[in-house]
Length: 292
View 1 (tube, rainbow, N blue to C red):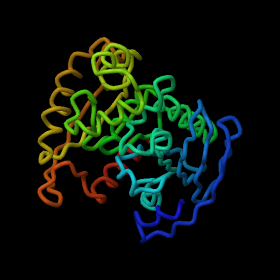
View 2: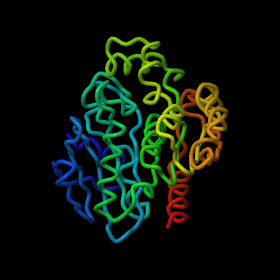
View 3: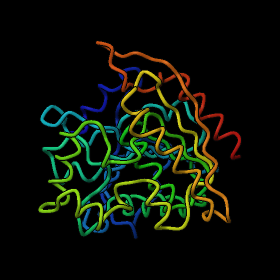
View 4: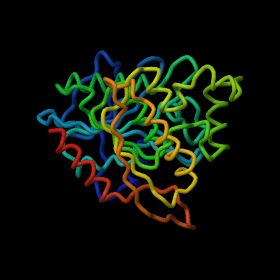
């Protein structure tokens, strides 16, 4: 099952140790590829890890969307980047996708009675404790749905730095209606959009999460492909306007959100395509260096 991950990058040998545990008996297995299967809050949380305990740096990745029916889970996007990044690295497989295998994007929603974002944030805290790193000092990163996770988890962890690329920030206005409704129906069965807006706004909108927790990540680098016109219109621009209204948070200041724009066209003129690997890795290493 895990062998499929080598196809994401054949330049690095894929040969992980598999380790099953609870959060309480989690162990640091250093200097090697490890896929942890962590039982926590009713979830099976799969995490790829490469841990360097001598380092005070930790980067944590959320998961992008997958192709349901064509993808064998767990799948760890960008797992091979541990060879290019300073310090330790964790990559989450969204536990939602293990519960609901017919959907392609879970946005770490989990179930109506258990929020997977909070469960994965607990895992980051535990790794941080064992590595001697404050959870808020971990650099969180994600693209698209992984960016949504990074912002949501970053609020829970009071993260110093979060980097996101073409993220969703408001799932109610997410332009891919079929993917959005598939997740709503799987994770929140029987609830229509009006009920979801009333009962779970802080799970489905980043700004409402910040309001509900009364805190936000301290610094956010928001990267946006300008070719992705639907996300620019429905996600990035409304978020930029709303974030300016969050002055009561973070000791009277809204989170410091910086925007970085680029122009990249995908196959067939597709605009929802992430930044290329090289500049992304450069940005992440710069953030790690600043945090040192």
